[in-house]
Image 1 (cartoon, rainbow, N blue to C red):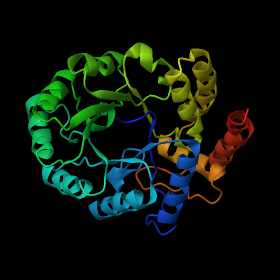
Image 2: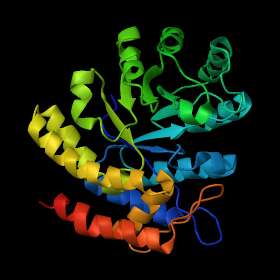
Image 3: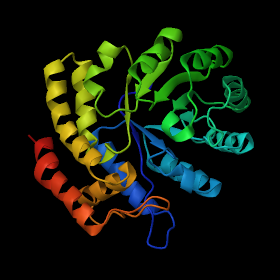
Image 4: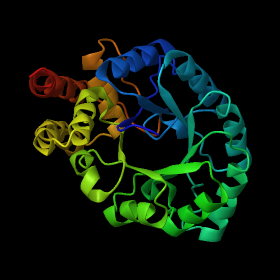
Length: 296
């Protein structure tokens, strides 16, 4: 069973644009020290859509060698053949696979999405999280569709839902109770029990992963008051992230440069790297507001 929180990693880049594996290793060590037990690589936060298949394979292999706990690898792509290639590679390295529906052809018919995912799932040898992120894919993985796929493919074990529709998030469970459901919402961690889901997944929250780890521990212990107290600190970080005209990925990389001095902050186009002013403001937020409370 996957443990909450799932942290989706960033992909750090050297000044020449290549992947900085040493920096990724430092980040994974930071997450390990924070108490994280499940990471996801090649996800949205990892800028997978800006990576080549070769780079995604290299990142999977590096993460497997560097990460001692549960590794989830996101294998989604637009072409079913490319997804199958990544699945076959991921079968040898990942503990779990995650797969997005195809994108660009927005509002594709559910039957077409089911056919696409069915062809992919025929090749999986690892448990699979279906990944719903309609803001980016233009396609919704509806609860009924997920339940049908789960009935056909026993390795479908859960859903990573970044759709932000709580009714849909809960419906995955009601339609198929055996599935684990993780919400991609940094504000929901104290409420997972009342929502009837299994936990949260965070990307931009990774630089302060101690916070969602503590919230999950408090929820598991039935200590709602402590969970909400820590969530209040996490919300300060999230509010600042939402208020800044910057992608969550660029924000997270700038935040990591406070936790890990020298961590590269650049992102690949079409995203934009945090300006010097923005990065300074993010580092100040962590130093003066968030990190001090981590040690209280």
